Length: 338
Ligand SMILES: Cc1cc2nc3c(=O)[nH]c(=O)nc-3n(C[C@H](O)[C@H](O)[C@H](O)COP(=O)(O)OP(=O)(O)OC[C@H]3O[C@@H](n4cnc5c(N)ncnc54)[C@H](O)[C@@H]3O)c2cc1C
Image 1 (cartoon, protein in one colour):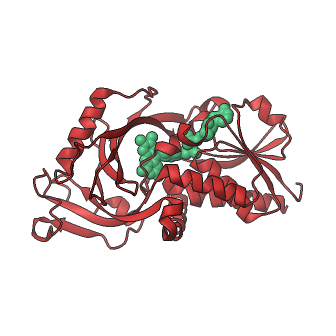
Image 2: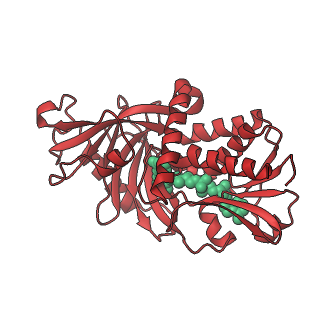
Image 3: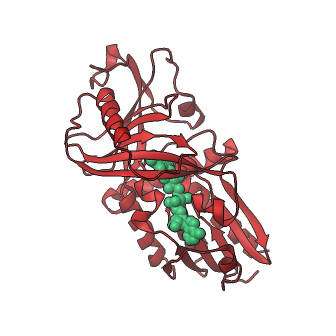
């Protein structure tokens, strides 16, 4: 292995950008270039909610826990300069159905701290008033304004000496013959076609962007059997992302007006004290890059070229981004020293 790596990262969503930044932070002598068919507002990452949402079904649980924890600690540091990074911490409320009175399992698994049970008797913020719910769980979590966060990562990439971000759709043949000694594959759902990974499936999500004056918390109601998931996530500066849907194997990226209407109705039922009559700023549909057996982070040699695969972060790409990217960079660093 060459002592100074010439690395190509393919993909410029949150995973590609974060991996490129971690590679440069780990070894400033590396030369790192990014190629991507889509950048910034064209990526899935741009439209993500994006709240810190650890999930248990993303691969080996111990790895997921470590990656989430590292990301959370990193986001805490970045939240010290929210205006520049787009990372905020806010209070959140998770509503549950009447039958489920126990603390959500993922809060325990991922060690959420200072979780409070909100019932009719201690509902000082009146979040239960005029809703269908008799209780909720209050917590504190990270929310990321993705348009700003992607800009922050891109700036950081160049500050650290990153070479170029080039817009280009690639084939496997292009990559095998490209003049780099390591290729890091951060193509998300694109890996299905590029590397023939049939475990990759889209999980469709539709959202609405809206300005809601006076609001600052996040609100969430867990997934329902029909795939509806209802949430109101702040992006800072009074902008909110309202969701949504969770539709496995759905590829359609056009906005469905019926779904948009249902999202607004569900959010208004969940948080009646907020004003959802404001002007809609944007409708959006994205496909979560879900991998049935979890995130793929492993080396593969194809026609003599070394690849590190790093994709399949499903509906938690932001939540896992720093932790799994740090590990990707450490794996390359370790290999370089062999
Ligand atoms: C509605 C919705 C809400 C979400 N909310 C949250 C949330 O609250 N919290 C959270 O943690 N996550 C959330 N997510 C998930 C998150 O958005 C994804 O996990 C994350 O964006 C994946 O990042 P990525 O970089 O792997 O993929 P992408 O952002 O899709 O980037 C993939 C990159 O690979 C490039 N590429 C692919 N194929 C090729 C090719 N052949 N040649 C060149 N380039 C290629 C693309 O052009 C792109 O640049 C949400 C997703 C959706 C859809």
